[in-house]
Image (cartoon, rainbow, N blue to C red; front, side, top):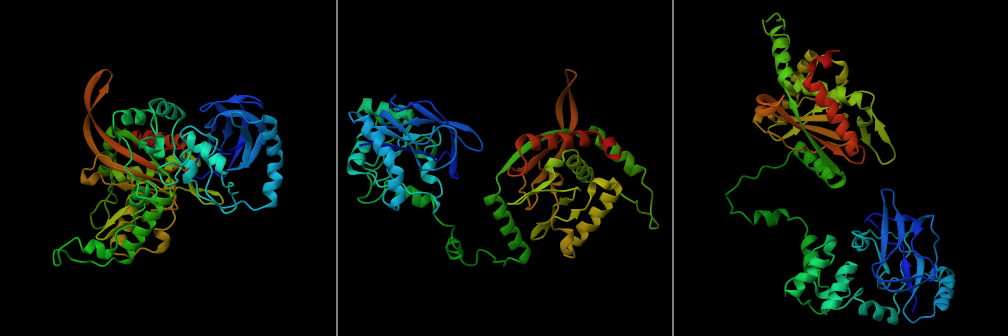
Length: 471
């Protein structure tokens, strides 16, 4: 019977793709593992391998076609010994027949192609109600799929993911690929799994009758979080004190959970030499005048320089001074920098508005005043909501480096470690220098890797040359 070749899902979220090029033409023989087409997504062009063997009877979707839905038939393969013309004729009538009757929701047939390193994603792609459902396999097709190791066997009806090389090695060794535990991406069976199976290792446990072999592991992976009662049951009564969450702690938990679950984040780390900054800070603080009470008008900290440097860096790289929304990118005109302040039961990030326009002494005094009111819980909403980026400094605790969680709707946060003496090489000589490690967390939806690196490089130049902050 003819075998339908369908548009594969090259990623878990893929809905459509562009059929860039056919590498086989009608009438060509196709073997398992042959690259037969190239599919374009918004990120890359990927080669697609055939799983079944036969003759390419009909190309249904010509190359160059854009927005082809996942699971749509793009070609038909005539199996061995089948009349190619008859298979091609059946392909011409297939679209009309499919349009006349709704697609059944029966079991998914084994597809006739796969994309390297992405085939397993087809089963994990979210099912859209608008997506056409594949037709149920005919008995003849199901038998063919099983005989080639591409369909269900003793694993409860689940599809078996295996590379073409692994299938060939399993066939040569007389092994049932459906009974081999895959260690590749998404549990895909690869060549080393065949070698392990030959040695008597890597075989799946016998599944319970009528249940998928992966049911136990799938259940474990999808296990819900423990309830309060389950957690309390782990501890002896009287061995702990129960402190109810206040509104701030609940808000922190909700916002950071949302950030880690929905925001793709990457991290960039760089070391900064604080030699010039330390000297400038000491000189500026020594020159500070005194107020009527005899106290210095200001006393700069390293964190004040960090705030100013990040604010100016965002102005030098305005593409990184953004917030992500589903409909548009918000590019901010000013650098509103949030600064994490630790509280007894949480933290809050008061914001230095338009920090790029303020002097270091103004930033220092404003930050001290905001921190004091934050600890007294007297901040107004506009003083801690919004912002374009943030600074989290744990250097005072001796922390060398760490990563910080982005505070939505911001797209970045700078984690600042302690300044410490380290051995560095200058002009071929090992010398001591005061080095501070900083790590930039970036929302990948809004800031790409190169852009984040550009922002961090701009920050490093400013923090290592503080005179540039007053030019």
